[in-house]
Length: 314
Image 1 (tube, rainbow, N blue to C red):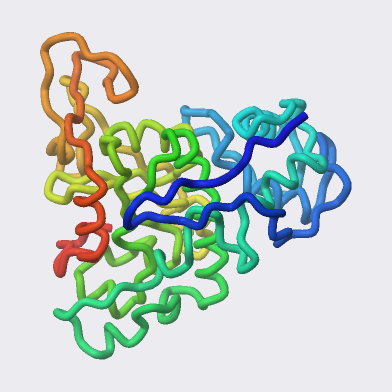
Image 2 (image 1 turned 30 degrees about the vertical axis):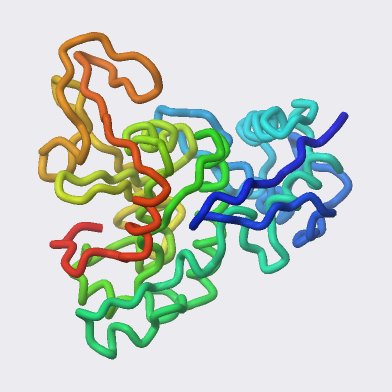
């Protein structure tokens, strides 16, 4: 049994270090975990493989420390993707694969903490910008934000793998409460907890990103008629904001177009009267998203940060 080499080719602004070496072993695993196992090691495993649970019907994958049949399914799909025997038993080879995806600082292979730090905005006050480059000043403490960000990173690692290992550009991650007010983000924005990210994927339509996210345990999927990105969040895991612990995905109109909360088609969604096929296609009469982003476009978009006025959007 061989482990598929985990690495990444350098891709412009989204370069990551190629990793062929022995894994960092950021987490010390037991000898084996299987269905019926319980405890903190199982919970750690579930955090890492949750994005591989394939349900697309808003069935929640529980991260509760109980290795159940859902965990077995997620482990099997993780193993299959990384070239391991898909037996659903987490042992040495599976733990090696997981450790290859984790850095010594507990971030993940394709994502760094700096990508999720609060941005700086020249339109904001010194008070709003004082926590730029940190995870401070949010609606929960810094340690909790970092924990939430790590969980989000693992979900994004699964999404990235499923979407063909295309680089993901993050335009907005964590926001302090003062900064969120300055840019007029949603009052109860998930960004203030480290549970949300605004993103695009290189050479992948926003619609495809949303479709893949639906099978990757992303609870909050937002798209906008006026903003050209996807918003993904893990709101059901955010027990600090209990009123928002529900699934939030776009509705679709009679043309199959994804709709924003203002009931207008999301950016890039158009009517299509002919046949539409492939992963960008809609069910129904055929709305679809034609817009893909080049690496250069995403580099510029990432560097720009959030809009100075989000008009109450998350």
